[in-house]
Length: 257
Image (cartoon, rainbow, N blue to C red; front, side, top):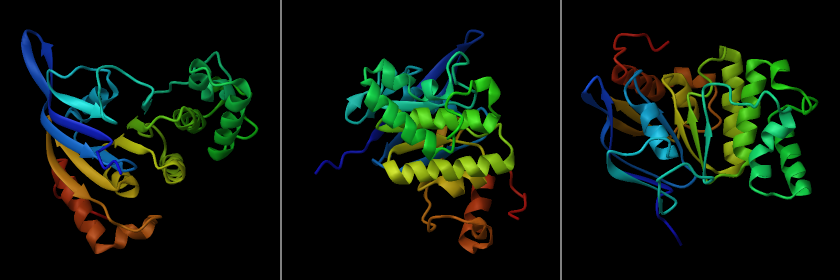
């Protein structure tokens, strides 16, 4: 039985040049993620969490260290690592079903099989009846459903999600969190999810790591029973963990209520 991690980040440093000065966006990060784990990365703005995700995606190159995904070195983007961005990524010239099936078509999946997969995910994300709509006809939340469906439909081994729900209203965000957890529970994909929202992290994560100042400063298991309801806000352990994470974000003194 293969027990190797799905993702291994070893002594990772990512540096950028800015006005003749070299800045380490990520410095000396070590991280191993098990297959099927829902890992949430939180941290203050500018702390390096999105840089870490982009390095795992192969969108930026390490200055030092290595990244291995599914036993293979990460040197560029790959079909094994799907990505959901914060910004809208639906092609405006494609209808909903074509957006969801785009990567399948690009990968040479036969039409009948592709149509079956697309139909499954259209139903799974609640877009039945909107298959032939254009992205401009959809709300922001519906466009995000398209992005999530497209990511899962492409069947990567790992999903990388960079603050995908950050621009949405509270109710829409909660619904998309529930949707993501539903699809994750069905597929058991390895997920690395970046957010600055502590409550979102506590709702989603098996494990939370904190990136601040380019360094990994905390690594915590989240063992609360699923599904996690609003009652979690009254759980003393959850309250303590929330306060701890707020402190890590430099928000000491904020209420946990």
